[in-house]
Length: 96
Image 1: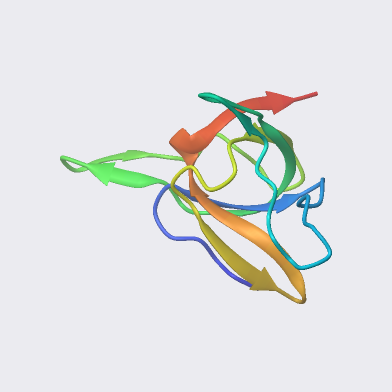
Image 2: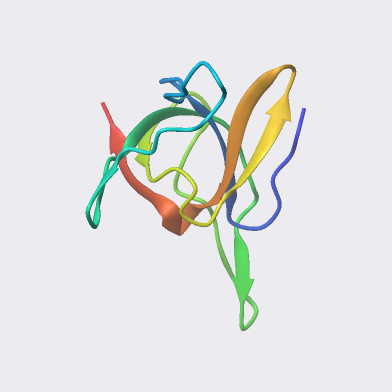
């Protein structure tokens, strides 16, 4: 399992990419509007340190969140599942 560092969060998308039969990714972008995706938090980092002050990540494993795909994260393969490794600030909202 991947253990994120600092304020990073490992997200498993709960919706699949839209791709053509040839493998071309169809983005959820119309003009300058982007669609938020739903995902599940798989792992969280310990938080970040700034000027000696520790700020923990405000997310827990198992929570559902909204995030923007490919905003500034990295796609990683975890046990055959394509996941996103994002900074906590890239998470838009928690979903109840």
